[in-house]
Length: 545
Image 1 (cartoon, rainbow, N blue to C red):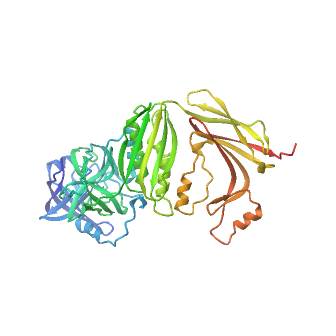
Image 2 (cartoon, one colour):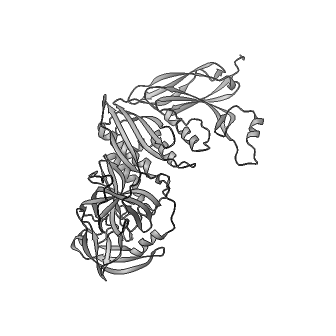
Image 3 (spheres, rainbow, N blue to C red):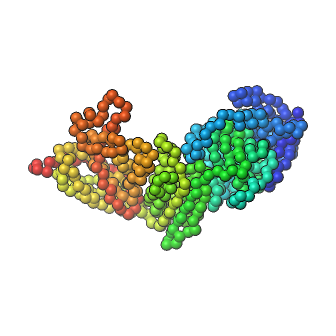
């Protein structure tokens, strides 16, 4: 059988190219056949099946047969696997599932790997979906590529128009074969997974022919795209594209492609980053990020890293004081502060470990109730100074200290490219420690986790996130072998054995959690501290010799 496929080679208008049916691969996927076709067109014979052609419709005798969805890496002939349209349409007949807020949807590690991201020859694989990125820094683009590699997405730098449909305006008409994508980030930078529209049934549209992430019910922005050019490659050519208008919402990401609704608008999380350096505030960097539980922290990291790089391109020996505010629906804003030092480059992975980004990930993955993040604001103050030191030694006046007295701890610090110096921290030794062996540890604040009761609900979980030690502090911890408990959201210390036995009965699962008693004191200091050191001392009775 001979037919034609439609895709965009350049611009926004789909163009036809001839295809010939070669064979049918039965049960290629569970209870799903794949139709094998060969393109007979000079352009496709030269380029091969390019990344971005996923979803290109194939017609025979004027009837829609399916969507180009599979291909080979390093193929010498333009052979493609077509997902039958019956399989794609069957996805809409699955039982309706309540669409949760996408910020709460878990993302399993998918097995889909695109041919542009995997060079394994001889294996029919989903055609890669190029991830068109504009406005991102080099470090952010590299970070995105590493994070997206397992998902089969291939980041490629392209332009972004940033155009939007006017409120209340009708969605622009699009034809099968047009470039459509899923917008993960839009605004001052954009990140769009771009493929091809297969079929339109009124407001409902079908695209890609294979999954994007394969996570079922979603609510992600769908955009129309413009193709700048197709870049030839021996492994797999790819379309360079940009989003030009929001046209609807992707509602389902299934085994046989994505399903969307034209005209709907998916919710996004606005992120604004303000950077001040050398006494001057830079213009705000503003983006909107798709609501997606696993991707939101990573995409926010990318946006913040790009904003810092754009505002202060010189990052040598830089200290960034970063305050992140998470606006969680139903709660006061969650404000978290980090002080980060970079000797050469403020890598996105360093930002990903900050309190703000970690709290965002923990919040979206909490086990209690959906947490909706309405907005994220970041304020960063950048100064060019090597303000960091490593803890290299810890000493006390002796190996015995008196309970109820003061203990001057001598902490040796080694600053970055500087001479060692000693900082004295004067701590109080509680009377309750008399007669006990105590371990004293000094560590940088970012490395110390506060004593917190186990959260019993979302409110307790959010309140726990507010408690942390700043990186610009030295934290002294006194640890004994005495037990206390964390019970119903409260810490109870220094309990006698009889009380511990009562609070930790063995006949029920909801019991108190044991912990080692710890007294911690934070000493705010300028700069960022890394490392930790500890010593052992014996605490004497205050009335003793």
